[in-house]
Amino acid sequence: MAPRPRNEEELQFDACVGARICRTRKALGMKGVDLARALDISQQRLSSYESGYRCPPFLLASIASKLGVGVQALIPTDKDTA
Image (cartoon, rainbow, N blue to C red):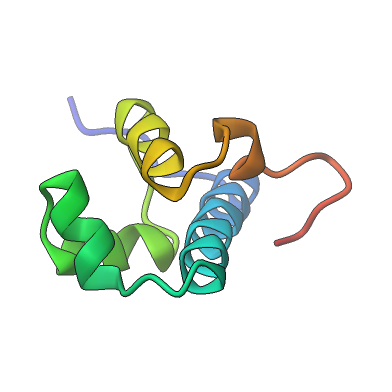
């Protein structure tokens, strides 16, 4: 069975999470390749998450930990757009 297509709200949520990952990483002066290495994933995979591809929850927790923030810092609220 094929996965159902994501709706606009889900796509926007994923894009916002990715933007927050990228913004937080850059604010720390961290390169994508360094974060990817710390997570034991490819830089291309990290880039896809930062570009809005859905990040698995277990990995989101690891990303937050490596960035020194809580997962909630990467999750948008109803008031946020990015």
